[in-house]
Image 1 (cartoon, rainbow, N blue to C red):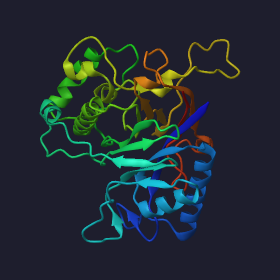
Image 2: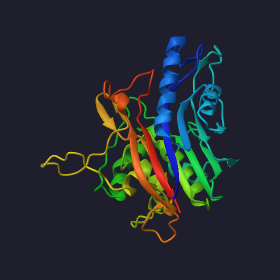
Image 3: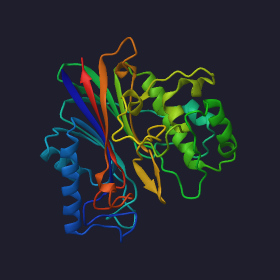
Image 4: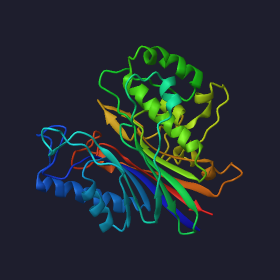
Length: 333
């Protein structure tokens, strides 16, 4: 049985010196950079992936060099990180990147969905906060898959945060956020919903099996996930109809040394902020990877979280990452 291992990795300010990020004082010394890239290399080796999506990429040439040293022959980044007009050594925007051990046949642009922008009443001219990557990859068995890599708009400080649980319906989520969106109280959420909606309609027109890796910058059961995955959000219907599925929900959960009073398994956070853990990093797949679907051609066999660097400091470190890495193993039929 052939397998495919896929991973998502937020690198946390991947900026090669002498460049800085956002402010001149934010930069790595040569030794710090060596320490950070050594950790990243070891992490990638441990992940043992065939395909990885990266977020927070500023120095893309350095990342391409690093990953090619580790056996990834194919590298894609579809935009350059922007620099400050007054100081070209200061980066003011970040990008995403994709590496693969298998041929990347084509890169396809993801267009903005005009109707979604109108629907969400976005007042500014819409553009993705980070240009998405949509790549056509040929696997060893000659099967073709489409891989997306994304990093959606981050939440601004002091903006409203909406926390939903599994039992909340789509209708309840829409109702709770309606006022804030209409009054422009949560502009970042509005931007994320436009990004997720544009991706949804692009995914809907894609005819190959899909793997979607991202730092979503929103939490489990969020309205952003509904906009990205659920047709009911766009058609205003009560019956859910999903284009993508969270890999976490497609594998059996294992309890190690279970406590007798434990009622349910808690999902492991992938990022922490002000002492609170959240799931921000995801791998979604299309129905071809879901075992109870008729057209299943592949199966998700594991969902792994690489978070040992959180053990000493849950908030991570600039010399490592402030995100956990997610890896899924897929059996190919």
